[in-house]
Amino acid sequence: QVQLVESGGGLVQAGGSLRLSCVASGSTFNININLIGWYRQAPGKQRDMVAVTYSGGGIQYADSVKDRFTIFRDNAKNTVSLQMNSLKPEDTAVYYCRARTWASRDYWGQGTQVTVSS
Image 1: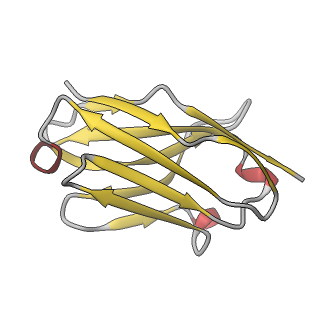
Image 2: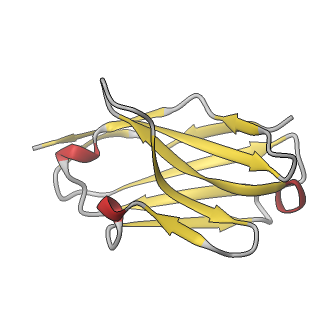
Image 3: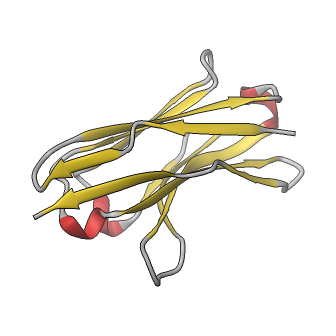
């Protein structure tokens, strides 16, 4: 079992910045978790990948956030963070942390709301 708790969402003006954090517990972070990262879901839309990291060090970003968002994985602290800069109204969504184990089990956090005003 893996428990994920997100924090850091809020309301920000366009052009501003926010940092999201996700703390994982219940598993040996660096050994059991292959993929961990961030997804988002806007009202009426599907949940999409924003940025993910892989245990081998790989990182993947959605095209829409490249050069604006940066994902950080800290294995010592069992955390993954998302630094979001130059935020746009279209970044408004509920942001979810996702972890996928080597056994292909998926875990999701409860989500944190990010609202960007124009």
